[in-house]
Image (tube, rainbow, N blue to C red; front, side, top):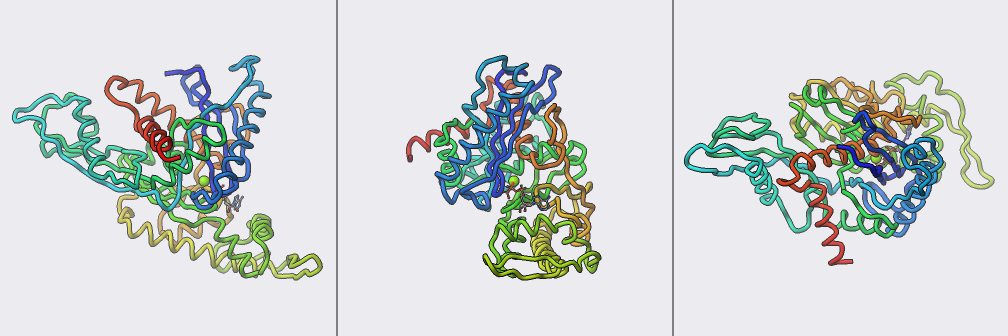
Amino acid sequence: MKSKLPLVSLDIGSAKTTICIGNFDTAGRVEIYNAIMVKTRGMQRGIITNLSEVAEGIEEAVKKAEAKFQASERCRKIWGKRQFRINSAYVTISGEHILGINTKTKLSLSDRPVEITNQDSLRAIEMAKSLSASIDREILHADAQEFIIDGYKKIKEPLGIYGTKLGVTLHLISCGSSFINSLVKAVNQAGLDVDGVVYSGLATSQAILTEEEKEAGVILLEMGAGTTNIMFFVEGRLFYTSTIPMGGYDITLEIARQMKIDFYQAEQLKMQYKSICVYPDGQTEGCDDKIIIKKSSSQYESISRQELAGIIDAKVRELFSMLKKEIESSGIIPRVGYGVVICGGVSFMDGVIEKLERQLNLPIHLGITRGFVSSFSGLGNSFYATGIGLIMHALAEKGKKYKSRNLQRGVVAQLVSKVKNIYEEYF
Ligand SMILES: Nc1ncnc2c1ncn2[C@@H]1O[C@H](COP(=O)(O)OP(=O)(O)OP(=O)(O)O)[C@@H](O)[C@H]1O
Ligand SMILES: [Mg+2]
């Protein structure tokens, strides 16, 4: 299905906010027309800490995206001379309040075998969702893992099969209602409507993981500034989701704390010397040079690169051992066939792959963004993965809705109308 209006994704991370613009091209491929990145304000670890700042940040990002796209050759081709305006966007949500659970339910259809319809599958899914519903949580995504017909498991598509009982196992991702309401409010305050709210990890997985990796069993580790998203797919289905409040900022905070400097100086040091900082254990080659740090307007102090490397190394170890605990306690490791794919800002630090490989004892692969075309350069690494994945996700959802338009309203559409109602009631 092709629609004329470009879709817009808005990913408000702890460090950066991105806006991507895209749609299907004439050959039916996902095309990213343009993308911008600005610094995030008023958000920490997926939680809004200052709503006005977030809204202002979104407005600023929207203006930048509109101007950049308007000035592009691609815009002239698609949009002609018309003024390009962003009126709505798909938005990501993340944070410790994100919860992934596996649940199942069984539906009695009839005493005699009957042909299973789409309505039956949807009824089973809705029943499982309603059993997991709670007043303070919103279900963002419901991914059917398998259907069970009269005790026979591993059925991917029950449509047309005969049975008397239909069971379904689902992976549900939910978020705290107050967090989603605040997010929608901030986006609305910036003058945009919300087309859909999508868990950031799920959006990222869409642009990073291949179907083959998801079939074989793959862990996606998205290590951002304030949050780390962990997702596990096997047999093509999602089985595990969790977000833990740790990321690159924790490394920066540790540098700032130990060196008694401010956060921004610590972030600069981390970015400038990252290439020697996370070398595999014991390797300190090239770490003897002195770094001058500014303590106050007149006070300077020198430290060795080795000292800085030591601080970063210790923090990275601590973060990775937390990750290891989380992954081990989830029980997914025996089913990992492909390995772990890493992305997010922390994955750009040198030595991360070797260090994680030793901690987790699993093959580690650096994620790249794939599955789209673009004439816009700079989308090759995973910095825009979440925004690009969100466009892909939105287009896939639209396709699904189109296929079953008389049978089902998309999860995202349901969620948004619900969010809008809640929003109108309370704000
Ligand atoms: N090239 C790099 N080398 C090392 N660290 C980097 C690099 N680029 C970014 N980072 C670090 O990665 C973090 C930013 O990652 P990312 O852009 O994925 O976060 P985010 O999406 O804004 O936040 P989150 O998803 O956690 O809410 C920062 O801590 C930054 O210092
Ligand atoms: Mg992010």
